[in-house]
Image (cartoon, rainbow, N blue to C red; front, side, top):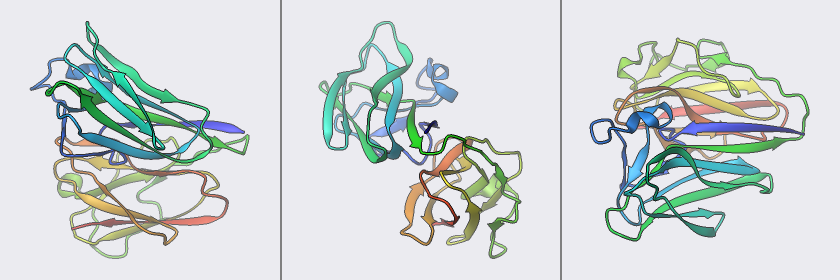
Amino acid sequence: MSLVTTLVDDKSPLIQYDSGFNPGIAADDTSADRYFRGTSQRSNVVGSVAKFSFDGTAVWIYGAKRSNYGNYTVTLDNTSSVYNGEANPDEFQQVLFTQGGLTQGPHTVSLTNTGPTPGSWFDIDMVAWQTEFTGTQLETEAIDDTDSRFQYPNAAWNTNPTSAILNLFNNGTGQFPTTSSSSTSVADATVTLTFTVTESVSIFGTVGPNNGPYSVSLDSGQATQYNATTYMTLYEVVLYHTDNLGPGQHQLTLTNLP
């Protein structure tokens, strides 16, 4: 048995935020640089919700505890607990919630700003989860976007990321991308990655103000939609991740949505 930990920043499209969340930026927060990668998503709207799903046996959620922060509720697979995020002096990159001993498989976590005072803050810095694999020897491979296993079916893709809506770097379990990239601003443009793996796969790319929604389909299954729009451009961001694929050949199809 092997255990692998996956960490994603708050700007990853894998975390979904409602309209009550906004980016923590240096213009509004002199302590913004104390967060992981200098970013966070925060809310002072009671009832605002962030959620994400993972496949694993343990989960960690990180954020800040500060003097003007209030309560937040964490719901893991329909079981809810209330916590307090207030601290003085401020504390950063703190574990806001953790749970281990879960059954290996899919789980969903939601975090809600529960005030109770209107204007009480709450933020998310990053999340991590641990996945259990049956094999004792794990191997990783990074596949660059120029590899022939990436198939770009038309001329909608180019190597200029400045106007990208969907921008891909490469794929791998636990590997960061190289400096090359492929991007598109054409609606419904697709790219397909065919690969052989027994455990997991991650897609890395950029998020930013010029990026937009996209969908990912695994092995011709139902597509899942994500949104790569953020207030600032960030690289080496996890755009997609899945675990426990099983042995054999698999295929990922990413589509740039209008």
